[in-house]
Length: 275
Image (tube, rainbow, N blue to C red; front, side, top):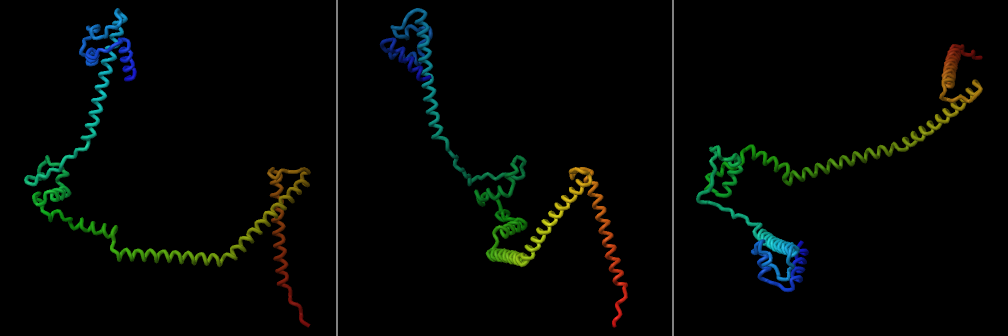
């Protein structure tokens, strides 16, 4: 906005052909009334309605430029003075001859001025002039025990700290020895554990192999019985497997019974006569 105002003023000055310092100063200060426009303008201004409009614009721009310049300078001075006086602490005034001692029995006295903490503050500021007994500022037995307990907890003596360090080291050594003992015992069991793992792995493989062979045998038997390949998930195949398992259980029972009978007959037979 300042650039446009300056350009307009320079253009007006060029159009006029010469300057009139006193008239321009009066225009900028707003001393010339709005009705007396022609007397405050240069003589080269055109007359008529166009000249009236142009002179009005000239006076408005001049007054706006003057007002903005005055506002900027006023703000700058104000900011500088604010920076100079931004920090101005009030000095602490101690009236040692007539100190302020709050009346604890009065209802107008705030509660925080009736506490023991405020009494300590008054005695520290005014001393004996505060009228406070120093013995009353000493902690009570309960407070003293609490302070001692806190000191023992957070600031123990050197002997206690050394004992605590020794106890922690002893506990750490015991844990380390127990862990080493457990590791040694497990390492001693390692060969047997490896052998058991390998045996279980072989048994698992053998079971899978037997199950696969049994499945193949059952599918072949179902193909011979039904004349076509049967889905192992079909009800016919499952019924056939149940019948075969029942027959196998019967055979196993018969075999066990025969073995028992043979053992019984062998034990009841008379011993051979010696020659």
